[in-house]
Amino acid sequence: MCRCADVQMCPSPTRPLTHSHTRFLTHSHTCPLAKLIKEAILNAHSTDAIQARVAQALDPKQQKNVEDASLMALATRFIDMETLHEERQQAKEQRLMPEYIERFFEKATAYLKCPARKRKDGLWQVEPVHARFRDGTLRSARRYGTPEKAYRYLTFEKAERTDARFLHPPELIGPGHPLFEAVLELTEKECSPHLAQGATFFDPEATEPYLLWFVRAFLTDGTGKTVGERLFAARQYTDGHFQTTSPWSLHDLKPSEEPHTIPAALTPYADDSQHEAVLVWILDEAFPAYFDEIEGRRVHEAAIKKKYLEKSFTYLINREQVKLLQQEGKLREDDTYRLAYEDTKRRYDELRERQKARRMEVEQEQVLTPAPPQVIAMIAVLPLEMTAEEAGWLHRDAETERIAMQATIAYENAAGRRPEDVSSPSLKLGFDIRCFLKHNQI
Image (tube, rainbow, N blue to C red):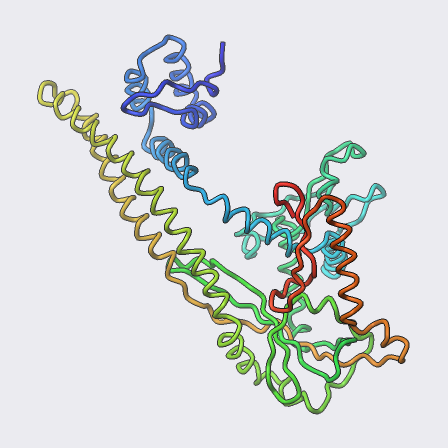
């Protein structure tokens, strides 16, 4: 005897319940309905009879859920796997190493007085999670969910989730995890005054001082949703001109352990009143390329959505239309079919309205509007004073870089991997070589 959720009904012109539908219905909390479907299948009723009995047992909310399941099933035919693969690769490239994330979490939780501690086995424990981190009004809570009351087994290393050393499989924490995002949001909120005051760093490569600005920019669509958020960075030199750079460049700088006075040549640009100048420059010089990137992606996604929505709604509307024609004929002969006819008519009208609303929503999703950008932080960067010997091994040397890259590429090729040179400054990736494993995995 097979389980009901595993049954795939035979196809028919009216498209009976599919595997995804029966799985949803039998795993719902509507026990009579689940029993009805199982009995219908075991007793070998016709698909028309099964549909009729199921339709009678469904309330409007369940009917909508089944229709949504149909929409999702049809949508999967048009998923752009190539685009998803590219986005996944890019996310992996830009992901910080677990050591950076863990170090931030350790310092941030200590600053926020969150009871996080590293266990002897290397896992992290946060118990209890204070109410401030579980505040439902946090932006992170609305997007990622509310953290649990306690976490006993947390790890920053993906591989440790299946490590046999641990009796209890640890939970992966990092960007996107409710607790991590809550810690990040509260840290940013409480440290924003300090960020506004600025800080001093040293650059071993610099020959003159400069300001390094960090600006956060947003894009919203016609529905009001935030569809893009990016951190931009720009250098401002003593003559006032700007130069775009990567936010990752901060990792190449050395923080000052003592307070320093900003050089007089930079003082006029370090005032809060100068924020507008850097925001205007970012919007004019750096933002357009980002806007074009998001716009192109949204147009591409909209084309896919339109394609599957038209097919999905056409199928569902046609199905209800066939039912209406059938029930109209029966209604002329027997008035007892009036309730079923009116119910089908209601679903037909609702589908037409939903189709119209979704078409409008897809159009609105393509209308992009830049939200006002925000200056997150500004730091003063000074040339690092070094001895001649220190300068020799700290300064970047083009020939040394070339030899190192050649050796790395040769090593990766010998190991059966496919290295790619991405050291061009225009890419602003923060690393020099991208390496692909089998099946084009990074």
